[in-house]
Length: 628
Image (cartoon, rainbow, N blue to C red; front, side, top):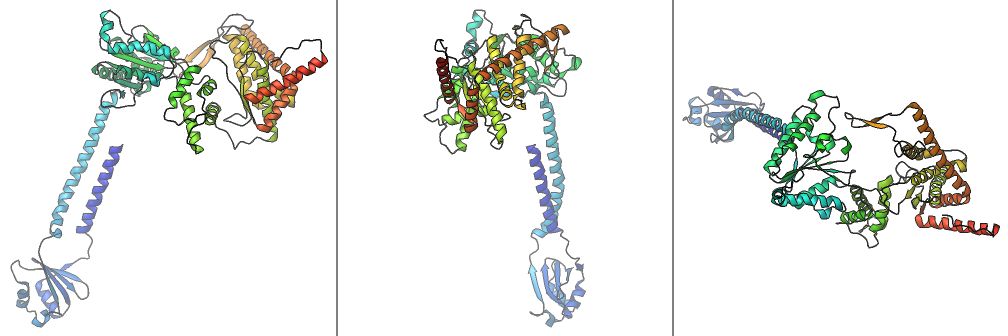
């Protein structure tokens, strides 16, 4: 596109030059009459001529009435003598009567005609040459259409930012497995001598943002080999066969480079299960996948070329890709735990002036479920916020604010709640917090706020004290009761419900169906109901195939309703029992709009002390247990 614009501008420039020359040489002067010398002599005698210019054989005549004429004389003849011979009166030629100027023949005007003709001849040739060159470039691009568009990292002449294992925090087990790959690339003879075969393909799987691409680049840097990176979508084109040609070219280029790593990102774009019944045998995606299978199966063990691929949808990949001999080593990258999150935050602190009061451990505790990409975004948002406030360092306040911004979105300062809406939001969030803190096994409350963020009018942040890989049924029930706490608080206070609880109801229903249909935690027993079906063409789960009868479906609905009903009863019982505390938390929220963890715990402790004193006074013979 850039070359096309340059050629267009060049053509415009040439046209302007030619137009200027044409205007200079052939500008539309008034028509000049050519007269014989005898007529000039007659005009001289009548004193009509003001000036005569002689240039070689050309004579230019300027009359007193501002008209012009021209004439010719012989080359060697003396102009004045010729006039006398033709009968001009001598006194008419005296100075003051007429001015005669002699000029040398030649100059630009003499050569302007030939130059213009030459340019007119050269211009079509130049225009034709540029068109031919453009057509040749387009033809070469057509031939390059089937070439792989892989980016090359790690080779000489291609300086890029180096990524090492020190730039990848956490993922200890994944790094250990990949060290074998690095050692093989550095010392292949050691493995080949003992008969060991290095994996031909390494498949990196895990949630988005966990560092799959980063880890693959780190392997290439640590091993010191070229790293060819391409996305799965780059192989797919409109025309059948283009993708397979690009695959062949990519693997041929990698083989020429010797020891190298071919990295295919988003493998699920081309590696989905074949035989969807769409496109038949000429489906471009299937042709590309077939070519990848052939290329990987044809790799020589001694070639030193390894294939890395990354995907967050390993469940949709074709089984032929995952068999031994192709992607025979799969490395799972999990979301970072609290210690890994702290290390990731330290890495992304590089180049940012951090204040002395920053506590990355606290930030790591408040960000469960964050991926490495989320944490990088968090640190960037904190730096942007600090710069926006004209600070020279990033403080803890900006980091905490960025957590909520990444989770929920920016504060909607323009979204001002009315007095009634503010009261509803306060009781709703107070209901969530009070139910959560009253049930054993729930996560501690970090913050309660009725300041609108993103699409929510208020929120209650809970942060787990420890990483959980396995969840119990009691934890699901506690979570459902907490979700319905806002719903029950609204109904208890205002005797009606609002649309603010819609998202809570969706989550509670989702958990209830999971308990019944997938986890076997209901009275229906340890049975999994329903099989998910995925349309490969559309690329996402569309429907669920029922593998149970209508009678079982009715029982499932009944069990789901039972779980929801029990959660509602639990939440309502707690809120009715602690109505005074509910009102107190809601009132504090209306006044301050935000309650932090320390203040919330003080509210709970203060109310529990008052309750225990009243009970002890009323029932001195009973032992009162401390209620959470």
